Length: 259
Ligand SMILES: [Zn+2]
Image 1: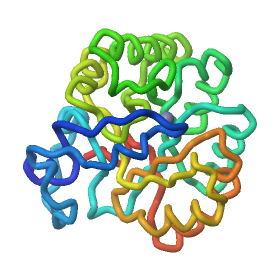
Image 2: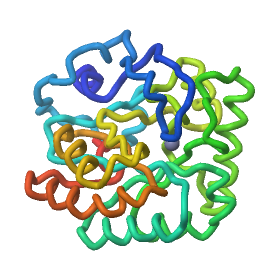
Image 3: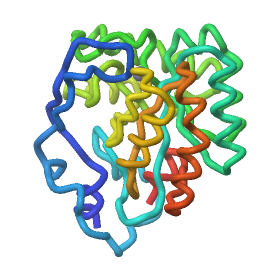
Image 4: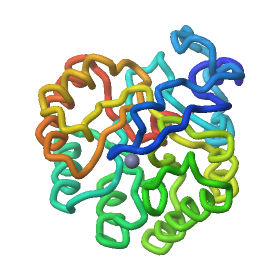
């Protein structure tokens, strides 16, 4: 059973790095990590034998790129930064459609708008860590990377009583082994990547965002989206309708990755 789960949940190993652009990801970091079972085809068949109940995090590896492909669930994950009204509009729209999302919050954003942390959790969403300053963490040494992760963790804990379960590295699609190690040291055993990049941070217009997301999302997908971009706010209702028409339910990361 554990082996089956690894087929879709786990990716360990090296990753590309790159100088950062405006989004979560450098556009040059398009190489998937290799090594371990993570290099196997993501088209691995259904795993009908259910995993044991319990703490799913113990079954996750150091990095997750997508969830199970045999269940009709997806996770919409948001870079947490930008004007408060846009963030609130996106959360409200998701809730109106019965969707739950995951917000990976930048620490300086939480400092600017501390009330958003409770707003996210009260809406039934997941809240996680997206570094303190959203710098190019893949270019940092271990102590600097740790400080970026731990700084945001402390802020999350001060605001909510928990540092959250998920960490997404800044300005890199995939966590490097160094990032994975420092994240674990800061209390995050699993780094969160994604298999669908909406490219919304390039402001391509709402129609393009909808087409990219609906064109690439499939069961188990983790979709990268961003607060702070008006095109994303405009696109979200059509994205939610499109997912619903395909019976793909947007759930939190915790739900997507639960056993
Ligand atoms: Zn980001």
